[in-house]
Image (cartoon, rainbow, N blue to C red):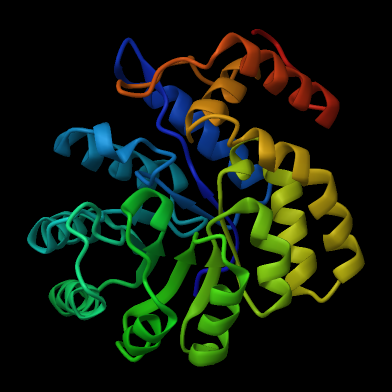
Length: 294
């Protein structure tokens, strides 16, 4: 259902408010560049600092701007199961094609608790659900055996696997087969994960290089390993650059340098260190991205 290059799109701000025009322009650029689906309100979209009405407005505006041309997978995860249900239900009402649900953070539930959390949401809201495992953010790793159990629930259709552990990703694919699509959650793992049978990526780098990320995923899905490998190595410096500071600081700084958004983040995220800014500017320039400011 969901495959290829799926951008975890940034939330552009202007004077600490959602910059609706900038978001609409980004969406048009992505669709023209071959992006296969859009995730608003993920980690890269600074979901943790969006108020509820802002969160819903970002989802609503994304759906309106996309106009059915690609799927919209709304980030609606929280560390409360009931809150997750409320937000996921709202995303469905707004017209989202799916929901991305992060592993509940801070609570550190057991694997059984994780299973019950996702099962409760899936039963409460009839929408395609993408699991999101990112232990570096949540302090909890969803194990392959838990994913295998969840794959039996009909509207749990995919997982964004961002543990960075290729052995774990491979084990999920082995256990689940075609019952669930495994998507890379770390750009540096997209090529090897797809070689194991993954279906694409929910990507940070696609914010900056949508054409190349889309082309790499498409090449892998079509079996053109050599072309995909070429693009993987081309993208690697950019992939590393997107994480020289906490995501989404580098990607929003890069998009600002490209003239696509204002350079605004919400505290506790703050502007990039000057030394890292110069490193990022060189990475972009070497990649061939036109830098207009910064």
